[in-house]
Image (spheres, rainbow, N blue to C red):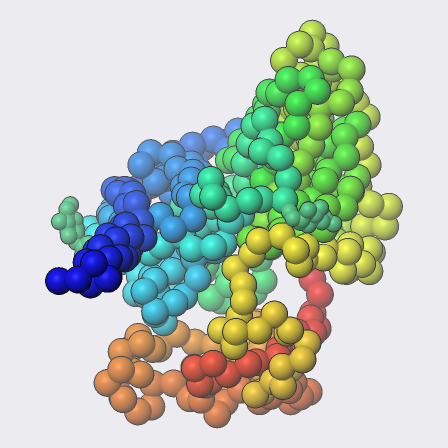
Length: 432
Ligand SMILES: *[C@@H]1O[C@H](CO)[C@@H](O)[C@H](O)[C@H]1NC(C)=O
Ligand SMILES: *[C@@H]1O[C@H](CO)[C@@H](O)[C@H](O)[C@H]1NC(C)=O
């Protein structure tokens, strides 16, 4: 072998070694979670709640991008139970995000092991039960995805990190609430608002330091407005997208949404109120928590900061949402599958205009999208698709734009092809 040949061989060996290093497998995290009923007093009176490993809300799931999760969920309830993982994207190697149709609810006294990977989506999310109105009883929790050290984030690492799961709450058992809905009536007004399952929580920080507050609306029916007495909120992330960092006095967070803000404790050492109140409701429900300065000896004093002036001002909320801008130079889960950053310049394969409505169907109130009120079929969608079972779902039911026709019941599936580029518009019709 000549010296050039030897050099080639060495290069080849080095190349092979580095390939195997690069492909070293991402870390695995293992969990066993048991779902049970328990009795707690979220609003002073005893009621049945859903616990995960004895906790309400469930355990906070902190992940780092690229970590694999193997999570064995044991259902000890008397009903099938399905957890949906927000922020876990459906993809070839990770389709187990707990969405009905792809994943089945876990029958009572059995277990299922979710396997998924936290990929690219640095940010604030939640997991929650998505069937049987279980969310009205608990079973939800925080899912935070942190960045690997090699991935930059567009703000300095905060001095601390608080998670606030805020939501409306009913004293009524979830089965009774479900009966109300099944009988065709709408939900009553909630009994209160909770932060992390409690009516009183305290978050402690040091004067001069900056903290991240991750705020999610885990409620059933009402939007909330969030604010901190004497402090501004610097918005840095909305559901896994880093934003242009605007300052806000208060933020509207709608059901299912999450935002992350940075708050600097730049005030004299005095405790302050953290306030959440319901939006667009006749009589707002309000709950407070306390931001405690570690060097403070005085407790929080009212008045608590006021909500936006007009409680029915939908435009205020819409305008605020439009100020949330993607920071296009910060890292993100990009590019899209079409391999392009130029979203505005791709010709959509299909444009779908959607509108919701609340029609009466067979004398019962139901919710519908483009007139179709979805019913879950007995045969799981994924199985029907895989085995080509006819008559389970329909791909022609949903029209590409809303009409004013009456609502009807159906199992509608929107059909698309791999790498299609879909533009979808959403127009809320019944706004509350
Ligand atoms: C159920 O849990 C057992 C251990 O408790 C585990 O060995 C088994 O794989 C789990 N089954 C499923 C379907 O996840
Ligand atoms: C966007 O992110 C980049 C990269 O981290 C940062 O330098 C820049 O200040 C951010 N821009 C805004 C407007 O927040």
